[in-house]
Length: 409
Image (cartoon, rainbow, N blue to C red):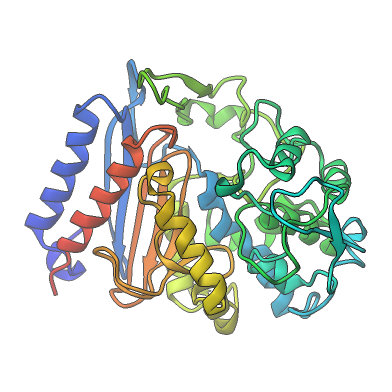
């Protein structure tokens, strides 16, 4: 990247590399790939190795499990259907997802599963898009009967057993009451996986086929999908979940024979994608370009604006913010942006080096992907060190802190 043209200072990019290298040299991050882009230009750093014990070096084309950074990308599938009027924001989801008809809602978050009232209204497409349909992963509610039931039924991606195929997953989900009334409260994760099923049922294609045809291929995202084919498996590092007590490196998923080495039963937009820094750069640049890529329109400008601006009411935003700031000791400071669009966080106040309007998300596998319209900037940082310990979160913070200092125009 020619620094003069890109609006980054040479000294700033050098410092960025030094800070990233320090994390790798500490032994806490085996390796990483970082990409910073402005306009046509991209600067990439690949530092360290694919495994904790050494081995092959990280490369620009290393494939990563994107975890929750799947959400902003997979959301585009639903937005295509809105653009084409195959779905409407306030359509009921029941015709496609009959499992979600006639919902019961818990009287209190810690109620027994049968202590319920009827839902005030049916669930809409908008509720799913904004993560407010009434069920989600609430780390402040661990130990409640409903969270126990979500884990027992295998409804979330990070359990020892992978999620079942979509119809069975929906059947299990349909047995549970909602935690909150539809549209009432922002809740994390589950709505995204419901959207995967919705898109597949509306289109009559698998979720991956539809994304490939409408998003990945037009953007040239050739390494993005829900598993890594055998011919590319050498480009996938091990995923580590270090022990929170001892810090000892434990392999959570091996590349060969691991969870992403074959097509999954459930193609989940909540956290199932694998990808590369360049593929994600193409996607976030398309969003910064108002939905176009190389002269081709992928999404309408209004669809991009809906995704990348805050969709929460002040009350919902307050609850989301409270959850983020009261859980800093669990999230290591991630998630404090204030707002949420469709599929991604949106900064609504300035709490760190990034300006208001920055959008994107972080992943529990040690991934961070954001774009910033004010600076026409994309930043992507990819590791495979899970957030069971703060190491990758601290690396992500340092990446963004030094990246913003490198801007020079």
